Image 1 (cartoon, helix red, strand yellow):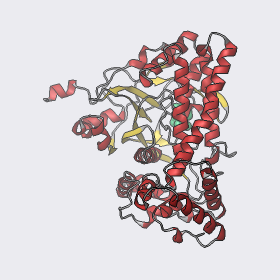
Image 2: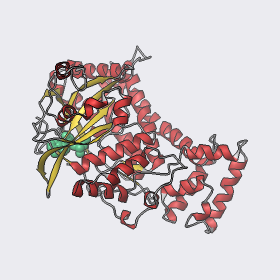
Image 3: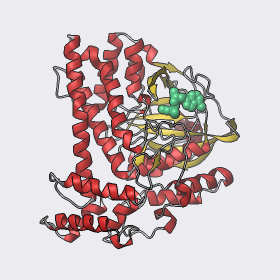
Image 4: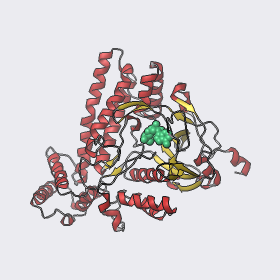
Length: 490
Ligand code: AMP
Ligand code: MG
């Protein structure tokens, strides 16, 4: 490709199907021009997987693209949405993000390409529409860790700094994250239309969503019921996986629940270290609404808000609609429980679930809570057969549990080797330890030193690799994690 062809050929070729939806669901908006963008991190693996031109993404033109300076063939859009934030309903929308368009991979998969931190939009309310380097790198690190753990998530393609300082409690370096998602449609998007749109708008959004995310739809007589069922199912599975690895999202407002079933918005999230269902890291979650143990309950609450938006589409008779929605929502708890118990059994090396396995699982969790054990390390040591290294290995109640567990394992017609293999694929060795993430971010933001971050990212890409030689501080809980606090990245 010569220079002229290159300049005509967009860095990432995009479609713009979202603009076929009713006008009030989005606003066309150019990103704020930034003075001197610099590429900080590019996810070359992801770019390759998506079939993008890595060399061009690494070029100056790529950096301009990621910074919002463009050029863009079509104006980006800010998406309108609403949301229950800590229980209170509010009109929201992309206040600091812009959807550049949808990218089609060589395999025909469609992904949103979004800039986060690209300036004010009509939905910015009092905010400046900008983002700081620390929180954008934090999203990059955690979302990549989540993906490697096998958890559905939005992805991070790149982070650039903008060359300008943004005002927070102290001035911080401005940055923009390029986010890739199956779609950014949220429960809050449906809430927005249900509240401020017509029934035809709601139908248009539901049809677009079905076409985009749940195609083909086998229930042609009631596609909207299928939509509800699928969202419930994807969330039941997603939240179960969060619980199984100890991920705490921190701000499960309805605007932060995707319809695609991808984890989104890595603001105050963090991984639990010491097992305690009451664990909360977010500084703004004073009541523990989104504590670890609350996550399945709050997901059910968010899904009920989603079901409410679909009521006019589920049945022509209002009472019938409520009944159908209620029945579908009732399925959430049961589906979640099944995913969770099966996952927990695999973590303990049990190939099939039996009736009294729940007891076995709960007794272990109870021991971990009593002895303030690290969640990840307990399962890792059990996987390695090194339970003698657990701090509470000599406690009588643990010994009783261990005997029960061993008897249950021995009753399976499965070799020790295969039991361990199963456990190794379900119990991560490496998670983004809070102290390590903070250390990486401090070096990056204070000294532009990305060595720790890159080492951390490398380790996090193979979380189930039991053969790796890991630095001790990737595996241990630091005292500093107690009372660890996270903040929304605004
Ligand atoms: P979040 O906490 O990132 O889920 O954001 C909640 C809402 O606040 C969304 O509507 C965001 O677009 C908006 N928001 C967050 N940070 C900013 C900012 N710096 N400027 C404008 N809007 C923002
Ligand atoms: Mg959000």
